Length: 98
Image 1 (cartoon, rainbow, N blue to C red):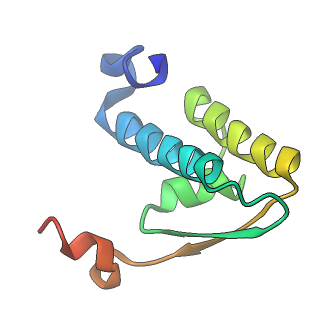
Image 2: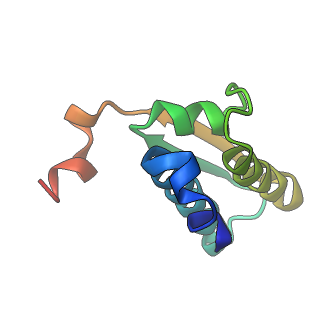
């Protein structure tokens, strides 16, 4: 878990949050055991959306590394992913903690 503690002051709070969101997706996919299936990922974070869709430049190599691990998992398990943007104001998960 060095990704969450290594150089936090250098990369800042935003990188930390984005790393946590990417790791959550990775761990969720691994727990699901949906080999050969399609997974639906709904996000309200456009940065994470870009990293998962491989549209983001390697601004943060650690985020790109986690994204590569996600794609490696897809290839290894013959799993596909449909990533959808859900704006925060209509995201049901965002209303719970507020």
